[in-house]
Image (cartoon, rainbow, N blue to C red; front, side):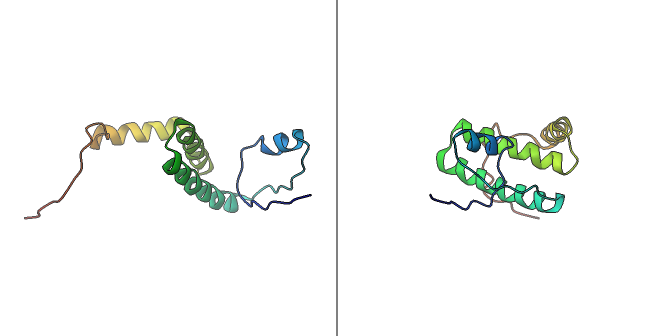
Length: 106
C-alpha cells in the first residue's frame, strides 16, 4: 500500500473518481479564507501546467479556476465577462500582437 500526499485543491468529483477506482482518499472542506488561499495556489499550478504543455485542456483548466476565484470573491461569470469586455473596449485586447518596447516621457 502506497500513500501520496497532495494537499491541493481538487475538482468536486475527484474524491468520487478515486473511490470508484478502488482507492481511498482523505479530504477536508476548507473555510472561506483557506479556500481563497488554495484557489490562488491552484491558479499558479494551472498556469504553470499551461506554460509547460500549452494545450487547450490546460487553458480550460485555468479558466475553470478563474471562474472559481471570481465566484469565491462574490463575482459571477457574467460580471467577470462584463468587466473583461469593458476593459477591452477602453484599452483594447491583445489581438494586434503589440510589444511595447519603450516610452520616452516629456
